[in-house]
Image (cartoon, rainbow, N blue to C red; front, side):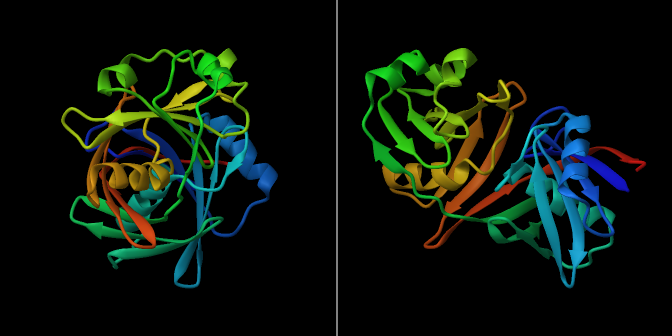
Length: 257
């Protein structure tokens, strides 16, 4: 099968978040897809194949399947639009989180994501101890969202994964604050894998409603402050979230099964 490695949420190589996109002729078994994702050892491997006028899309980390992934969706759309002969400017992906549409708008790829509203929870001493700092606010959804004082605190935070692993009620830990030159900034840690994700589209399904309410605006510019870094153009709509970003291809090859 053909595969492509695409850097998403960036317009230059070696930044943003890389994902492998595998183009299938038909579905593979879960075991084979998981083995491929493990072999690739990227944060996400996406598998796509045609299903009528739409595409089936699934996302796998090296360890498990995930229910929503932004950068691998943009990467998949980039491949569909630029490498496998799609003449339209819209593609619909059938996923575990419903149908996700991606529209090509010049150099940007705009995803329509579900809006995931987090519940505010009380900061507790045990959570503060595991985070290694006292959060301003905490929000709970798929991930734990931690509000910090400013961009500098987010930028210079050093995760203690041994502690963060004990926050096992959530998939990931997101730290965030108002940005200096963007509306907000964030970083995403996956304690189970002991890694920081470079740019996390799915977390913005929850970050955007939080910051839209705090800042009193629907269109927001977001930056993820990982070493690779990435920019996300976001809009908080009534029923969903729109997230746009650039993408650039790094490599193309074949997987021999």
